[in-house]
Amino acid sequence: MAASTSPPAASVCAAGDDLETLALDSASSSPAAVSTDPLLRPPSSPAAAANHEPFVIDDFLDDEEDDDDIPPSPSPRAPAAPAEAPPEFDRITVSDPKKHAEPVAGAAGVIPGSGSYFSYLVTTSLVGGGGGEFRVRRRFRDVVALADRLAATHRGLFVPTRPDKSLVEGQVMQRHDFVNQRCTALQRYLRRLAAHPVVGRSSDLRTFLTQPGAIPAFEGEAPRYWTTTANVATMPVPAKAGRDLFGMFKDLKQTVVNGLVATKPPPVEEETDTEFLSHKARLQDLQQQLTTTSQQAESLVKAQDDLRTTTAHLGMTLIKLSKFEREQATCDSHRRRSSDINNFATSVVKFSRSQAKLNSEIVKRLDNIHEYLEMMISVQHAFTDRSNALQHVQSLSADLFFLHTRAGRLESVSSRGIGQEWTRYQKIEGLKETISAAEAAKSQALREYESIKENNMIEIARFDKDRRRDFVDMLKGFVIKQVIYSDNFANMWGKVAEETQVYANRTN
Image 1 (cartoon, helix red, strand yellow):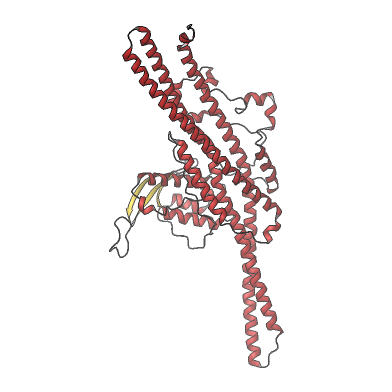
Image 2 (tube, rainbow, N blue to C red):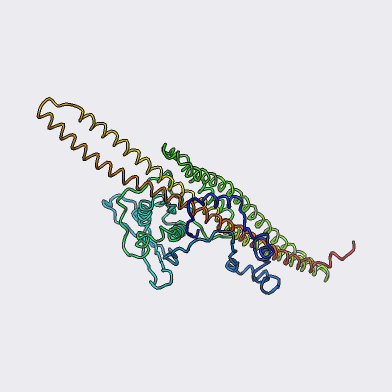
């Protein structure tokens, strides 16, 4: 999700209301908007829009990058955001996994290979290319150290969650698919970090991406959240994209559900912040809506994939039928009929191939649902930061109350001798020092709590603004792809209808 500058916290509700209705633009009713908005009047294809010619299906099937031709749609109703600093990193790739043997103390009896690990080549280029290209090798424990540092230094922000370390990694280290999935997951995670307007410019991330050498483990106390992070990777979409998307959503939803079960109730004082609680309840409702929407996306992709499979089988069966007709033909009319059946079968196979590509496009377009469902984990982490900070303040307040009460009792007790008076004086002075340290700690905790509260509201505003834009873009891209493929299907079947018109003109 692209980063954007956040509007003031007071405008969060308005942004959220805009999204709930998914209003496109206030100018959509004007004639100019009707003629230019691709959602209201999408072009038949990029080529047809330029040349007014029908789209050629073979070219379409061979074009793997056709979605890049879709122009971005304007959103005049969105408030103009102030210019923000551009991202520091231009492109991040994770590749070239290598297996290393890790020495184990007391290696006797150790299973061979159990002390091994993989490292990954992280290649990063800076925006503008002025700083050249950086190449560093990282292992997964370096990623864990980075995630712990970012979680501790950016509390209250919606920091993207890192992939989990598989509990059975030692059993699947030899599997090529696991290593490829880990590369994809790490690349996606690092790109999301770099896209965040605050986290993307942190010194910890820059060190991780540009400085060779191992990243030392985080020695401080990283926040302990209510759930583990999601191990969900956006993999290249194959022909059978439906089943991949189904499993992806299922794993992610289970992660979110497990987290909700373990969520602690908010501190008492937090319940008085009605504005925050309103946003929190709204985002919890959004999470439920995203979960339901993901189920419908699963059903759509699965149904499309089943249709593709059935169509492919039909095409192959018709090809066999045409071959049978050709072999049994005894005259020219029979041979022409065999040829027509073969042409029709070829069109059915092409139609199946187009359906496979359309299904892949559906997965790409609806991936925003998955992105935001996964992001809800980061939202819950940020809210947990707030609750934990407030509980820390309340704990320090309780300690101070106890210390003040104890000091007051000591000061009210009269001593019976010099020795007892000296002892009482020492205790009182010691309590004063402890109280002073506790008050300083409470002041620091209050500042941290207020900082987290401010970060929460800034992130909520940014989240709502980006959500509206991304969802509208998702819907527009989805509709445009549907129209492009539908036009190609219509052209293809129209050609078949023309070729077989001779049969329709015959009288029984």
